[in-house]
Length: 236
Image (cartoon, rainbow, N blue to C red; front, top):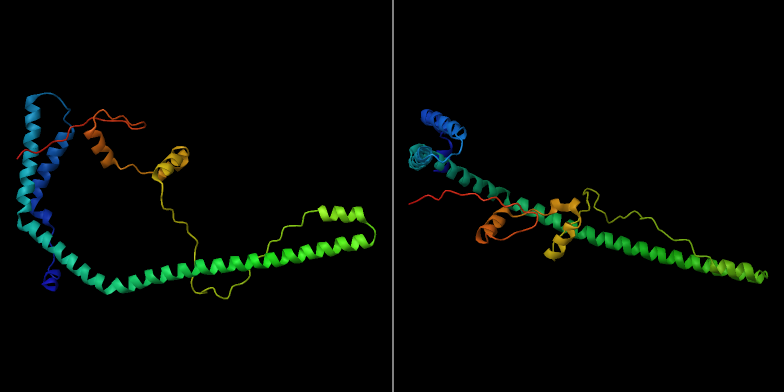
């Protein structure tokens, strides 16, 4: 069924509705150019235009053209599902490999850091021992004051460069990223409020805001401008 339908060309359904499209285009242009007023005649006319558009949409939903489009969409979804079967496991494997290599990279870098700290500890110990020998040598020369001054001098900081790591997977490039998870929403929002340059991190849920303001008409929220509108509710 899918193969049979998929080989049938889908005609431009708009060709069957050229006159209706032109008519509605003109009506829309006329509506947009009509100033809002309290004339009963104009109000009734706008309601009639709305009813006309509603009736057309209901009729089109039952038309053969709409059924053809729906059938084509069903074919598309069927073929897409078949394609997903082909690509599902390779995509899952790539995701699993990426996760595995990411965890491996974390372990590798932890190991490198531990080894670097260990080398630094060894270097610091050697540095301390060398300083102690130097102080003892000054004392044997009778330079007590110079030895005390040398003992008071801080040791220079030790910083060991990262050594080449043979455990790195050469054919894979791992890039460090930082993923943030909000664990305290109130603290997060308060921090953003005190750092306006990061306001883009907060995206207000306008649908929820609309629902809250409609259910609580007297609710006043700082930073929120309330506009009262009236949405048409179709009668049965």
